[in-house]
Image (tube, rainbow, N blue to C red; front, side, top):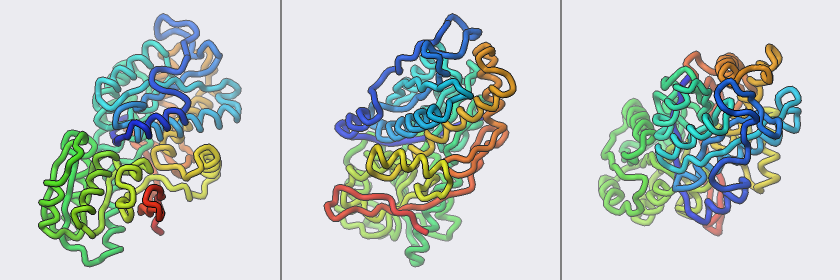
Length: 411
């Protein structure tokens, strides 16, 4: 199996609000393994529940994405436990904050594997983190499911690495096709990307290839850092070349600020945002100037599947708005673990399996299954990449107040 990617950014107040909504800040949920000394220990916690690790960003500028994942995972935990958990045994999510860098992800994985004794892990948030943290799980033979890792090469990290987040190579070009449908006269394209992030470097290569394949002229490629806040120089350089289309591969905070500054400097053409901007939290960054941005999607709240209706209703009841992609993908990742554990338990009671044996058998089982998730029907390739049929493109539509808005899906 193998995995990769994610992205984002945050404002402190937004993160604090999200943390409250998710029921906690950094550190692990109080789940200590039942009998713990090595990998032959039992697999339940002191509460009798089966521990599944959630390694996502709760702090740093990446929390704008990570917190959406936590929300989806928590909704899944509540729902599947209400349905009997693993053939009568509940699951318990054990969370560790990966923050926004590689060291944070590695530390989170090590704690979940060695201290919390989880059967598998959902995470990390970014592909950049996955390239560093996933090998830790691979060496320990602990299954990992990436819920927001979309960079090329992630499933190839190892046999214990998979993802429910479709690769950028499949998703990203859809937004370019949508832009050309809106304006068939597009000829010149300006590209911006965060050069210090593995996912964004991977994504921009996909975008640039798609631009050339469409016979369009790439007039400039502008680089920036995910920590940047001032994009005046890059934006001015691009605008002077009079592009018909701008494509941005960044995270929510930097990408949102870039959108805002492009509009403030007078750019009126279509803007495509990459997967790092694929969060409603970007709206608080560029506000009214977010209006019209196109972003490809691997999830739609409108997908008619029964499990998506349940997930969507639960999310709306709690947060009074539609769920976003990273939330749906995290729900799906937990669902895969639950359904794989249930199937495995039917073959051999998992409560009798040593932890190392359970992790290995769980890894085999989850790769072999097919799952009806909020993302639609999914399965995995032998290497661990997701097989998904349904993809979408959404356009940001801001409300008159300029502070609120939503993702409107293009038919």
